Image (cartoon, rainbow, N blue to C red; front, side, top):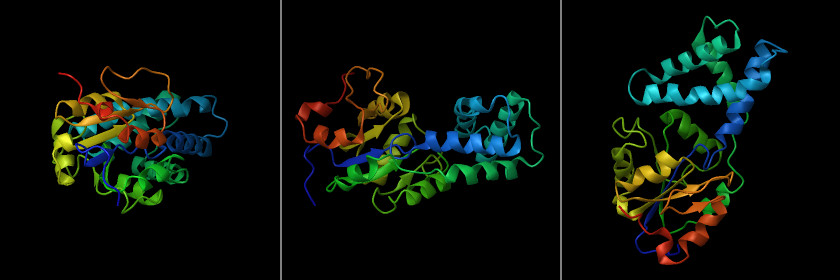
Length: 245
């Protein structure tokens, strides 16, 4: 294996959805197909994906805060979508969500830059730090061919209930790699959870802005593709300097 280019960085944690795995494309296709199969020609079919994406945020937050189970947030989210679209709420929401999941899984895929990037990171301890449900996230990693290549898959379910951006999520994930937070770099697409959040623990981070439409928070490097990560790691030592304050 090659030695890490930057002596201070010994491990890399990747976010999963939106970073290694194209969750949005799969979820958009899955929920659109689910609605079209049940209510063909629905006049708001084109809005389903956007509505589903918006509903993810509050309902996942409820689960991560311990206010409901992961299965309950799925029921609540699907019922909310049906109510918004003025269609009958399924009597068996668990079965209905399972039907959606079948369609969601059909579209699971890594981003085109994922495999190449992971393959080029010999010498680093690798892991995945994600806020999804443990079993689902492990399934995704296997489905896109990264099982055994990216190290442990770590969610709040195995980190004592701590989800990003809780500082304990970052320190726990670093410990799972056998490292201190100061020795770990986190790469992800969410500014709060993957970029500014880790800084309070001394963990460094890189913002993956795939759309390339926004400015990175001051003091944090921004890349628009994972292919830019290796040059950053092998660049000037101050490219991954810890943000001030």
